[in-house]
Length: 371
Image (cartoon, helix red, strand yellow):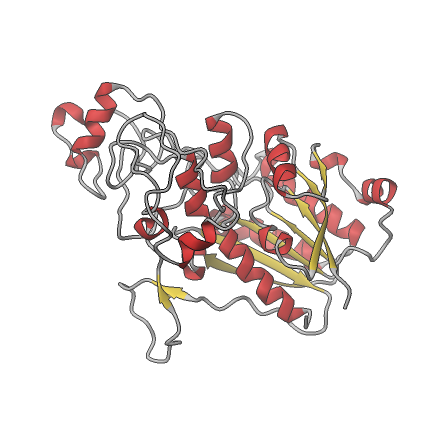
């Protein structure tokens, strides 16, 4: 079989399509991303891909035909994860939020392109949106095109990512054989496993195992050298192609009060563990909270450098995660480039699909196409 052609919608920096980009059986033909800095980052890491930076409403099969000469039936796979804020279980959810209707644009492109297979990714909150009606509507729409549609919730930690991150993965195929989702390779040592389980499964990767070769950054003085050789296979994988210097590993200029607050937090601690004079008067349930060294990270968000917004304080150092640490916890290798300000780079990381989840999905899609 020839190389399978892929287009990437709502592409971000390419987390969902990472596995396709690094497998010779696939070729990403084009990607569309509305945010300029994200589109720039995608281009920096995906040479040879035609990257469009436009509203999805202005992207169509006609675009691909006129610019790239793509003909009907030539696109094999469409992947994409429309912005998820309207579905998220964190914060306000509105079914009439215009972002919640972006799946209709995804549907339009499926109808125009008619790929053999599609992959639609979103947050777990999609399951309960409007009591499940939104998910049912999406599945009904996709099925109306003749696809065999399925969905499953996958946790990135189950596939070697050092982070608990659950995502809804909707798939559809025109092929006669039914698609089979990837089988987990890792497990939580605290969970009760069935009697018959695969003895080759590995324990969840911890935050410490992902980050222990990076400087602790106890102060704002820049440090760009690794503090050790790779300590495990994950660190080795993250450092392939690295130029021996660590980039994006700096910390913000936090106030003396915030630094003291972070020093007083025990590992895994929350504001309830602080002296009364240091307890914040506002914030979310996981604000001003410290991560654990010997557990996977909680879900990384765009606020990975903002202690007041999410659990993102380093387990051993009185500071939030650095941009590079956030990238590590999402599975982006150390030579992966981001674009813009610190907050823009953190947005690019926090919105992405972990690369190891992408790689697991790609392996299962290869089996589905018998390649």
